[in-house]
Image (cartoon, rainbow, N blue to C red):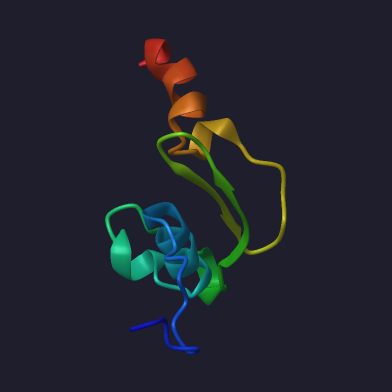
Length: 85
């Protein structure tokens, strides 16, 4: 019993599956508690997905802009502001 030609012997990792789900537009469905609809009925686009050791950093906006760390939920950016609260 060998491998069928249609079978892919390399299974994607959990991180790769999550990244694919994000690229396929499932972010709002997966994380509705962090989703903020853009004002005036605009459309959010996913511009970039960066993989870190324990999270994915997503660049999500109507147009590509530099990230504002005050509006980020990335641990490395918001933890630096924790002492200001």
